[in-house]
Structures are given as structure tokens and as C-alpha cells.
Length: 104
Length: 195
Image (tube, rainbow over all chains, first blue to last red; front, side):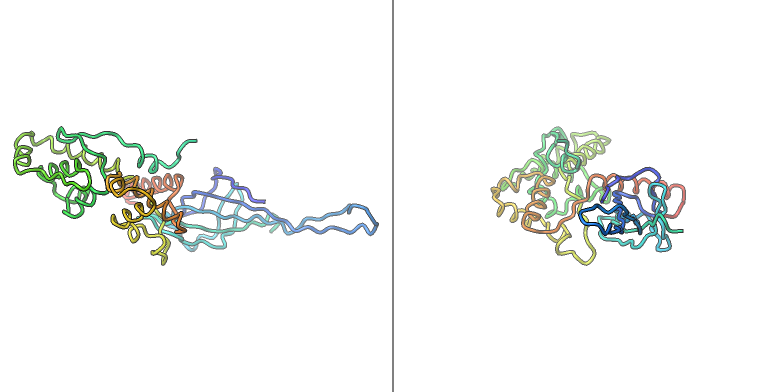
């Protein structure tokens, strides 16, 4: 499920003026077979829930040492940030990140 | 439906202009070609010294209709030199620059590193390439040469897209972000903060 959330307030990535942010949520599920014919399973477990972030913006001095992004109050770990194109003095940046809600 | 891209809207909606008391035609590919051919200082922003004669010459050129060239006579140049009080040069130059900017609203293009053949409008878009492309798309030669520069670039970029070129135009919200970044840089320079 993808949700383009615009640029929610409190969303910051140091060194990037954001132009778009998309968050995708996914979860693996485990369904317990009821062992009875024509019966719905009564137990389903969700695990490994993950939120993936992709963003674009204008580079304002991104440092490779920056490895987190704050989105909707959650700290995403950045997995990649690259400069993809140039227009005059401006550079377009795209990046990805990931957030595991149950990680300790 | 509202047109979000200000550059696109500006390229197709233009005002009428008078400079040195003379009405100008919309600034066209023909005018641009003539001024570039002559190395007119009018196209160099604030980088060049502009004299009355330069402005008068540019005004005459901007009244031309392809394939004609409306050269000012020596008498007209001399008259313009003596007829106007000198302080007005700045006002007339300012009006001429507004006229250029109004008709030069070309799309901003993202250029991918190492992908210049597909993305770089400077490589694709010299005036004759644009003219040839628009004529092959069905426009008449006279329509193309007399077309305002911004409008011609937008048609050109879209004809290239229809032929399959991958051209990434800077979006309106990216342009807003660029303005914000530019202001931030100016402010940092003013206060001495390094970005």
C-alpha cells in the first residue's frame, strides 16, 4: 500500500529541500490452517512490518554522513541518497529509507 | 483546470510592449536569431555595456517579421541618440528586459549526468533545430520563425517527447523548492553562513 503523504510537517532530511515523499507499508502474514474442511482460519499473525520511504528534493548540501530522516515523527534509516539530475545551479536528489516499528 | 506551471502559462500569455515609443512584435525565434547573430549586448543581461544605439537597434529588430529585417537607418539611430534625455535609458532598458523575460519563458529541464544527448536542451535546442523540428511537426515556416521564443521551446520539447525523448521538465513544486533554496543561499551569503 503506497501513500503519497505530500510533505507532512515535521518531515526533515538534513541537506535536502523536499519536493515529494512517499511511504509504503508492508507486512508479512502467517495464517494458521484450521485443519477443518471449509473453515476459515481463526488465527492470522502479522510480522516483519516495514515502512519504506522514497523521496525527492533539491540538494542544499547533503552530507553522506547523514543517515536518518524524520518523517511523521518516526526516524527512518536512509538506505540510499543519490544526485540524479541537474538544472542550472540546482541538483535533484532522490533517496530511500526504511523504518521497522518493532525494532528495539 | 488551473495551469500549475507558471513558465508554461507565461510562454503563451504575453503583454504588449512599447520601448522608445515604438510597439514591439512578440519576441520571436527570428528576433533571437538576428540578435544572437549580431552578438547583441541586449541578450547578455547585466553583463554588457549597453548604449542607446544598441537599444534602438534591438527595438528595430524586434519589429521585424520573418523573413524581413527591419534595420534602423543611420538617421533613426542618430535621432534616438539626441531625442531622448539620457536618464531615460535605464527605464527603456528595463522595459525592454521585461519584454524579453515575458517572451523567453522556456521550460527548465533536468539534465541527467552522462545522459546529455537525451536531456540537454542546449544540445537539442539551437534555433535551427527547433525550427526544423516544428516544421516537420506541421507548423508553417513563417509561423515558427515568428513564434514567441518561450512558446516555440514548449512546442519543441513536447514534439521531442512525443517522438520518445525522455525529457524531465522541472515541476512547479520543484521550482518553488528551487526559489526557497536560492533565497536560503542568498541569506546565508548575506550573513556569512556556509551551506
